[in-house]
Image (cartoon, rainbow, N blue to C red):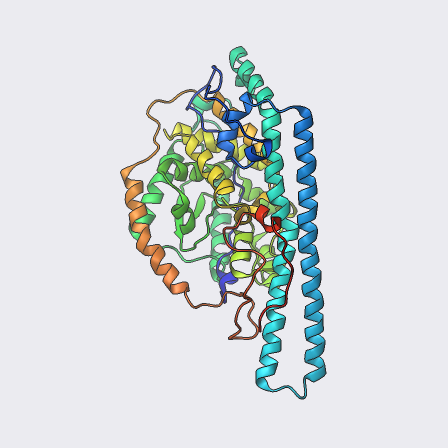
Length: 489
């Protein structure tokens, strides 16, 4: 979409992963005793993390089987990555050939033939960038996801047993931020008030540069999301006023700026299935502000420097939201070859920030009376149902799957039980109804707009066959032989 890159920049801080749904309190008994299904190890890797946490203690795969599967994954990853690297090279050669042809014939070309060559080069460039993103990010991430599930099957039984021992001995009370009875009266990071001005300045710069999507105009939806956020904030360690805005964007994402400024994108509301899922996301973002993660990030990369980079690459997405909006847009609209998938490590994001926000976010949702499995179910759904591509840039720039899953699951095990935890509300259901016409209107507005962001030659037909089909699991990309071809003129 023309100009879309200038409107969708999201300064995103880090999201959590995918863990087992549990009761809202310490579980001192064995995991549920439902019999494990008889299936192959490879088939288990296709199951959601939620199921695997339940099933892993009952599975009996030997070390040899685990290693054989790991070797098979390594081979599959190498084969698939090399395939799309080869596609990229072929597209690059075709681009160079077309450019030579254009230069050679430039004085004799008619307007129609010149346009055809321009369109061909444009589409080849798009396809090459698509293959580059798949080989460099999407495919490795898909396999990282499978490695994490394999680790879960192998390592979680022992980790679960250790957590149970800590519960029995009381050692779990020695973990950091174990003082959950004092939430709201403890200090996670001093100086939250100092972040308000920095957050306001960041928002002003983003708006002035046209890099922040417009706010959703539906006041009822805005009010509902704000009410959920304010409830969570009341039961958190946030010491500054919370400001929440719902943005008119199809992205499944949420992000926090310093000083209590949270942004929820329309796509996230569409993806959430109940209020506990939404509350879990909001709690995680609030945790980033209570720990001042965004302020610490901006000390290493100011908004001004980020905007400068954005001007250089035309569209830059600082990912970390629920599903990594950078690559989702890349594969959806063609944001390729622009240095789009930036490594957040360069900006100071660390795994410690994510682990801390994971823990605190679960605590805040729990303390606000929400079913903490909502937080887990949402991220599990994003990784499992929505496909790896939608979240690959987030996954590639954030801590390992397995470590974060286990740490969050342990926190759920250690939280005291709360009766009547909120899962769904009528207010959430009303919000979802109100969202339907809003989404329909937004989708109607998008019809007919160009699918390539950097369109130098107007009126070109897009490539008839792309490397990736929206919604397709990345694993399936190498399931059948494919070859790079010249796009139709």
